[in-house]
Amino acid sequence: MSAVAETTLPDVTGHFGPYGGRYVPETLMHPLQELEEEYFRAQHDPEFQRELSYYLKEFVGRPSPLYFAERLTKELGGAKIYLKREDLNHTGAHKINNAMGQILLAKRMGKTRIIAETGAGQHGVASATVAAMFGMKCVIYMGAVDCQRQELNVYRMKMLGAEVVPVHAGQKTLKEAVNEAMRDWVTNLRSTHYILGTAYGAHPYPVMVRNFQRIIGDEARAQILEKEKRLPDMLIACVGGGSNAIGLFYPFLDDKSVKLVGVEAGGLGIKPEQHAARFQGGSLGVLQGTRSYILQDEFGQIQSTHSVSAGLDYAAVGPEHAWLRDARRAEYTYATDDQALEAFMKLARLEGIIPALESAHAVAECMVRAPKMSKNALLIVNLSGRGDKDVAQVADKVKLEMPK
Image 1 (tube, rainbow, N blue to C red):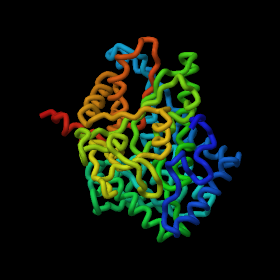
Image 2 (image 1 turned 180 degrees about the vertical axis):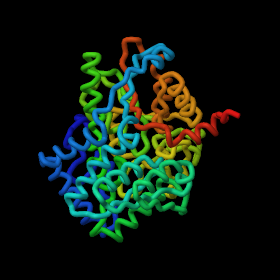
Image 3 (image 1 turned 45 degrees about the vertical axis):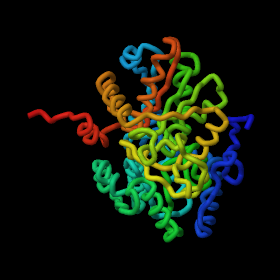
Image 4 (image 1 turned 30 degrees about the vertical axis):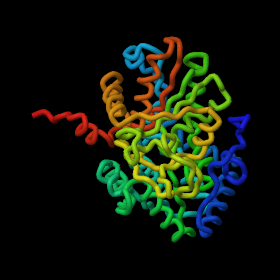
């Protein structure tokens, strides 16, 4: 526990301390081992890294800017606020970083078909995009409730040639979409690669997704040093499964002067089945291939969750985040639906940037923290995605009316 940022973590069995691992049916053990071996070979293959770097630059549009939010900084009256603009990536979120890495792995392994789960739709769009790019069949599983509240992204996936399968089981959101994707994978192992979208699931997914997303933090670190000649005092990112947050945090883990703050979905408040803040009343358990903090009842049954944000509406959190919390290297808090909606509108009105509702949770926490910090302090907020997909939902909730 002493070396928090030990780059060898997870260990060889995929554990971050007591978290992580590989809790899957026997039929999935071999494909996961095959994926692990191919991923670690690719990590050390200069040709793979060259190809990935090429597409991230020429297709995704990296590096994403680190933008000084001058008017938000002035309004809040405290720390100098920078936004890491992952919303400017092709497809509109950080999800494409991981999808691009995984499609190149799928190609190396000779797979011809891609499946993925999605909540807010951004990972589904990213997976459909790279599948179209490389000529692979693509099936996206999405909860029926999420299909309705993220209708724009459903159309985008279909336009890209993907089949979108609405999942009507259970709560009809992200957890059920993951279940269906895993069932599909078990049935079609020979031809299919599962592009899991977050730093969750059975090993090697948490470490693999983290490493594909760490480009966010690597860039932010270099950019803030160039602009300010020093490291930031604080990083803030929203946490669903946790890929955008761990991608930002990881390159700063050894820098103890940098405070790391993850923001979960507080929903309607911290009451059972009204939120998706796993560190607020969650407990240790196993869900969908890994061991982590989970919202479950006393009998181990997974509780329903709620968030205005489809991408944060999930009952478990990535195992590396659980470990960072135990190690007290990162702090985890939450923002309610109302706070996220307020932050959404404030960023739009002050900076001309419409954030994803997921990202608005991080902006909400920035609105709490920045005024309490010195004007010399530096704060980076990860703007993980853009809010086009959320405009209709937010307009209804804040009662914006069409002109007559």
